[in-house]
Length: 273
Image 1 (spheres, rainbow, N blue to C red):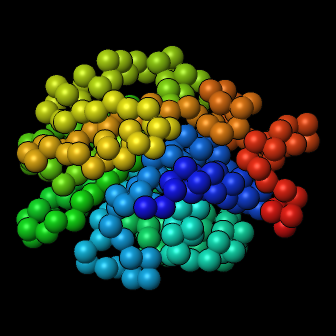
Image 2: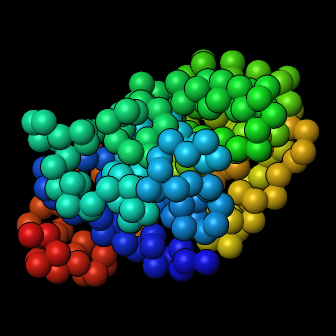
Image 3: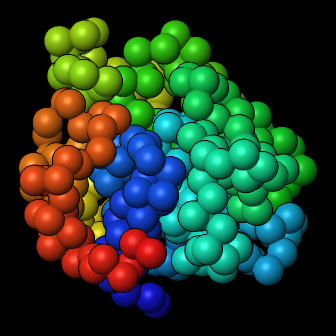
C-alpha cells in the first residue's frame, strides 16, 4: 500500500501550487479534506483505473463540497488521470479545470458539483442503480458540514436507509467552520451524529487526519444500511496560521505570510514555477 501520509503532503503542496497559478481558490477547505481523499485514492480503498476512467468495475467518489476541488484535482493528477502540468491552467480561458469540478471534461470526476446539497442525492441515485443491477461497486460522497444545512441533504438522509443502500458511504468534512464564521453561529447542527443515527444510518465518528482511523472507517461497513462518517477535521490543516481561522475560506497569503506557508508545506520557489 502507498504511504498515504506522504501522498497527503503532496496533495497539500499541489493545492497551493494550483491556487498560486490560478490566483485564488478555497485552500482551507481543501486542506481539511486532504487526508480522507488521500486514503480513498492511495490507501487501497477506492477501486479505480486511471488509464480507463469509465471502467465498469470502478467505485464512485462524489465531492459534493465542490469548492474544495483543488484537493480532488491534486489526487486525480497524482493518481495518473492526467498530467499535473494541466493543473497549472486552472481558472484560465479554455481550461477544463475551474473552481468547481465538471463531469465529462475532467477524467475521474463523477459529478459536476458546487451547487451545495446536490451530491448526496446524486450518490444515492448511483448507489441505488448499482444495487438494482446487482453490482458490487461502492459509492462515496463527501459533504461539507455547512452544506448539511441544505434541506436536500436531509431528504437524502431519510431516503438512503429506506433503500438499504449498504453500498453508500458518506463522509462529512466536519471542520466546524463555513464561509466566514463558525458553523454553530450560523445554523445549529448539534447533536450532529445523533441526527444521522436517528434516520437509520451506521454512524462513525473519527479523527479526519488520522489515516489509520480513516481507512478502518471507510472499509468496515454495515451490510444492511448506509454508512455516515463524521470526519472531525481542522479547516486549513497543514498551514498553522490558516488552521481554524474563518477568513481563510477564500484568501491568498500576503508577502509576510507566504514564507511560513512555504516552509510548512516544504515548498521552494522552484516548485512554483
